[in-house]
View 1 (cartoon, one colour):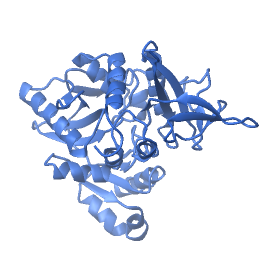
View 2: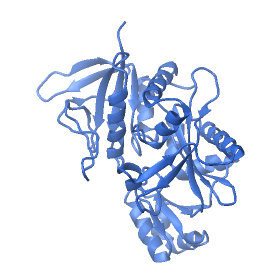
View 3: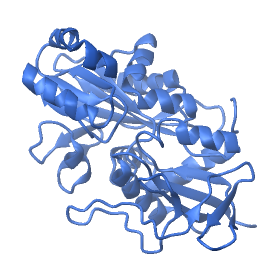
Length: 364
């Protein structure tokens, strides 16, 4: 029997480009080549799709972040034929064969936000992860919080700062934010991997933090600081009609001296530790896992998601956010949580591919 052809897509036109490459490198290293034929595809910062070069680097080297090597053949976007077509200068377009499923190891806008998912839906190509709506809502933290609140889940106080309001009605916006109390955390509404985030304790710091976040996204989210421990839980779709499963929860411990779980803490060596299972009362652990599944289902997620909580000194669980395509290196939080729960990284990759192959495209 011929092998299942999997296109692993990585890169993207956003500030999480390098994070995507690191995850793709881990997937390409562990994917079962006896079961799958792999087509590695990079999306360059300028939006070009290219066949990955043989010597493509996927890891941080010193302080240099990886990026898509554009020396490979340029590719046409997927079509209803599911064929990958190479477009090389001076050559007749040539088919590289059909793709059975796409594994998009993509983060941030133009990859994790429903845009790529919509393209693949239109082409009728199965893909790993959540669909268009869940991806879009999960990417936009403002709408995500609205959906989570409407599902009866506890979220912390926040203020949304739209582009026009910041430009035309700044005094009102600043007054609304000050009512949250100090300090606050300022972040782009549609970015991840802790890109563009700053902590602010004064109005001067706040305005600078908003301008910094706006470098990534004209829409900004400002959240009240919540004291307590950061606990994370991964949720995975089940094959068939069984309910989604929640992993053991884990506590994130920042070790590099950062004030919060920023980009360096997430992706540079020896900057964070994950304690799994988190040291929580048994009842709290059960409640947190159930809340993680409720959040997953509230957004209509598919495949894998990671749900982040704060556990306050008073014993309250506050839901911070859900990630429809969490960091996906073998050392990222979600794969570590599943490894501790009994599903290895290689098994997780295989499960996600099989889920995608058994899920129809289109309305479901």
